[in-house]
Length: 198
Image (cartoon, rainbow, N blue to C red; front, side, top):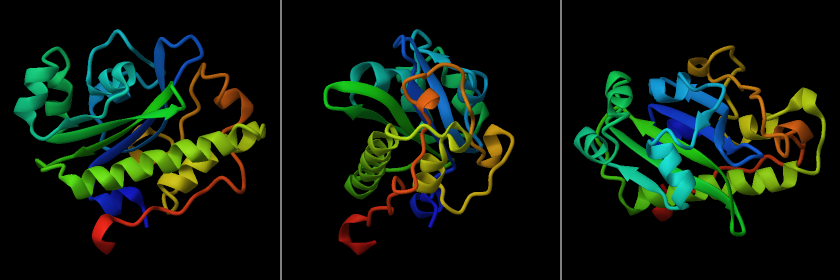
């Protein structure tokens, strides 16, 4: 089952940090994402302050439960989320040891409590993706770049051509990941169960 369906999210984005540590490159996008993501499809500078760059810079998950909270915390980019109809958002940093490598962003069209169950599920997905990336670094088949992410996050999603179609993007940069091939036949992991057996 797709993470989007399982978690009931409106949109999902997976970004990896560039080699120079200055830019988030979007490796996978699905659903109707805020223009802050699609506008910077070729890379989101960490100097552009928003929920994704906040989580990337601090290493702490960013939880936005309603539009007012986003407006209060990120007034410079709030118009993008409002225009996309995003009411709630959660961004989880991805890290290997002490090194942050990217973010997993989930967005909802309705306000969410982002309670312990939702947070636990999203954290488990973020950990699953990180482990898949670690295993994938051993592979260098660029023709199947990001297939592990496709399989791990959206196994039932067809490949598309644009950010809103669930397609895989091949960004510029991110040589340590994309250039070595984010793939591996054994790298796909099953989705974790929700706490309480949900």
